[in-house]
Length: 366
Ligand SMILES: [Zn+2]
Image 1 (spheres, rainbow, N blue to C red):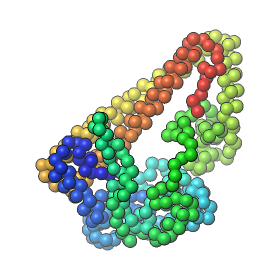
Image 2: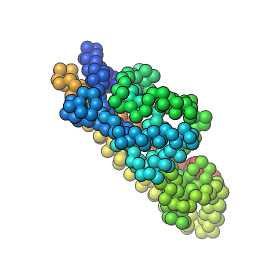
Image 3: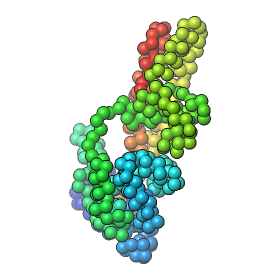
């Protein structure tokens, strides 16, 4: 993360201080500090451990876990052989290999495999300032952008393989150290929407697990790789047919019994409203959290300006900034989802309350 911008954001307009903060962070990185989240195959070291020099170069605040090297090399071999990151993830999950300490999910996914194998840290290169913040004039806010030229330093002690070995592996599947090349050919409207939010509340008959929409098909969520394929039922039902049939049946029933229709509509709207209230509450909580963090960051910035113990303060500021980033991202996602569900709600209300028995009333957002 770009600390100098973090400082500006919190009112450190004094260019001198900005430079000092930036410089301190850069120097700390070159000495082996500024370790944030470590990946699988690594662990963080305490200041004492790093200073002892027992686990690698003195001052480096992270170390390789040598017991992971055979696993990483096997990942490399399997990726080159199958060209399928999902196959590597399946193998890791079958072997019960745990993800890195900061992973959000328990099980490996193709994306997690790719992120790890593309990281230059595997051959010992650490990167710093991978993201830069550009000021958006007019709003005074900052936009996150990927830094094309982060600061790097090679620590051979961190290598699980050589640079050549890593490059050879990535070439074999068309990846590079900066991640997979090229942009997506198509952007799905479901991109960024969790699968569990499919509007089809189906249940798999065999195991009782939820059905997820996978492209144009419904499939038992527990049969997916990311759930460890706990269910044997791999049947994929075409989602359009399922929806058409269910909607046709429901509309027929509604025509036969007007009370059913009323009940259905009010139940649907109540459900929507409840979900909305819940999300409003969590949003409010996150907003308060952001407010607190901003105050903390401003205090830290002030302390830095008054010349407090710089390195400790810079580290603290970075932690606060990381959390702020995470919360702001969460808020953005919610705001986006919230708008969508508001639209769905008003569509439902309009169509159903006006008693237009019309198949369009049940337009599913895919
Ligand atoms: Zn199932």
